[in-house]
Image 1: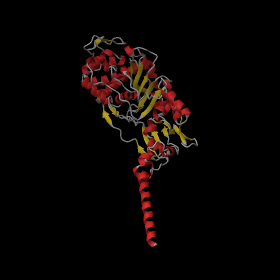
Image 2: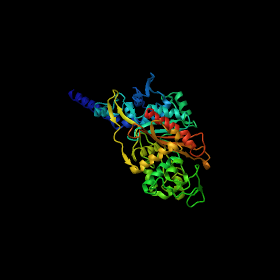
Image 3: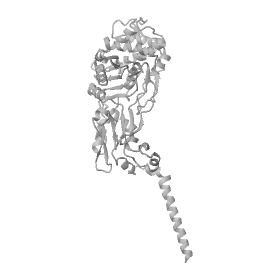
Image 4: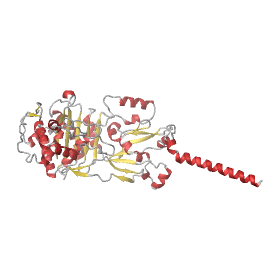
Length: 485
């Protein structure tokens, strides 16, 4: 009898071992298969089982969460959604997430191990901690001024603090309410279809994901290359620049909207945006040095993150002399995001130094304790400090008595550059209006803000009028907001 009991015990032990081995196979070896199974909703239910952390602007949350009482319990909400959409993006139970909602998802969803006092234990248990917050660098007043200035017109604004690289404003227009996409019902699907098929593209972040021909604002880069290369040594000396200028190797003659551009000095040509002078300067500088300067400013860099990715601004290195001439005045294949052109203005303002822009100041736990700071941000010398000082003078002249007078601010030194970029077949489209600038309060030791504005559907259709008339007042209001004027 005892022998049968021993056999039964051994058999039961074998069955138990097989059961444990199969459980280990399912939970360890095949865990990825089950986790990734589209019919397994446990991860999704857990993800929305607690309120999402907040994105903060000026210490105040611009996001929230609402308890729906459904299986996917918490949905995302947004305060002033269209104003901050280019920064927050959306967090949707149906369509995923974008921008800071995506880049900061680990903290905002509570899955980042660093939110736990015991990160290693958190890795083992794979449990969620209370969600943390993402603190942005935005200046609320500047963001509101930019949004108000665009007033629904297609365009974008980017503003940077030159001395640090902090992004102070990032606005795209027209915009949308990301709260419409938060849930998972029919209303969300309808909103998604409407927004994605809207010809105005309200979900396109024009500040960082759209590139435009920068037009005459690129003349800041060309002037920097000419001064650094020694092609121009005296900004007040007359240049050898015929008006009109025949593009090398072609019969095409380049002309100007302004008068008296023939052989104009760099100062005068910059102030009145003479195309002929800058096109010839680009040819005189040469492809190699023009390319090196453009890339020092950030063109052709596909690695920029703020922390979400930024579209690559381009300066074509494979051009003949005629194409180089056009590239040097911001046409041909030269393209830039508004953020890139704000970086150009920031480098001029900060003695030729360019700091990598960033949008997140720090991340925190639910109780406000800092998890991670913004970290170190690389700085590079884009141009000689003496070149930057001369460009500051030239940009200040533009605002004082040139094409950018509408950007002037009482009690501050303002420098700027207008631009009107042709586009469309045969340049038939209404030109894009550009303005890049920086501002320094009279009682400040250094410029506090650099701004780039582009308006796609500007009211003017020729010359520099559009940049100075449509974009400059928007930049002025953003700079005023930062300066507290």
